[in-house]
Image (tube, rainbow, N blue to C red; front, side, top):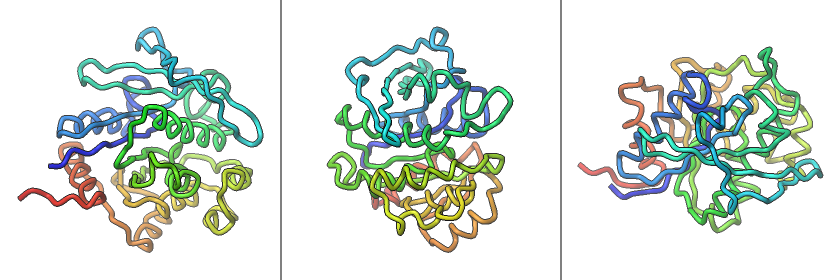
Length: 274
């Protein structure tokens, strides 16, 4: 098998956050892919719920220090890193005092979504991509997990399409059953236009920024789609069928690592060894 570089971009990983289906997959999948001979990098946000001392996070000075402009405002980007010794795997954390450090996780203590989750998503995605550029590590494929990464495919195909680091990078999006999420702030439309997207690019979210519309936008610009839960939103399922892109159906915990690994080869046009 040809070794390829896989970048994992996720909204949560255990043990840094409580265990969920998504956080457990994003803990086991990168390790499993690394053990199958690929080179990986893994990113998640540094939420306030992440205990820095217990998990031994430390700032990577050479990667920190840049500012990202979102809606005409500068936001400092801090990069931290920690290791999972049992997995021989590093996790990079995207940090910002206002967007992440002072926030519990994706939602507040009462389970209510933050009103600026659209900006938090944009900051996280752009923070990952800018950090990868600084690392001078060119990914062959980026695998996105969770609603916080749903805008990543359109950013890669539009704002970053001329970047040498990402000119040949493929992107895969995993769809989870996450219908409890609130709609993103409708101002996300204009914020994406400020980053170079057009009305035509954003047609799917022109009238709605609900979960299904944002997810369908991810599906539209992804090179492949994975079903991460046994059941997903019906509107999203219908749109996936309509787009007719390479699709990996749901696999259980005993087989999803190998299934994803083979799916990467399909997306990257790598012949499978017989």
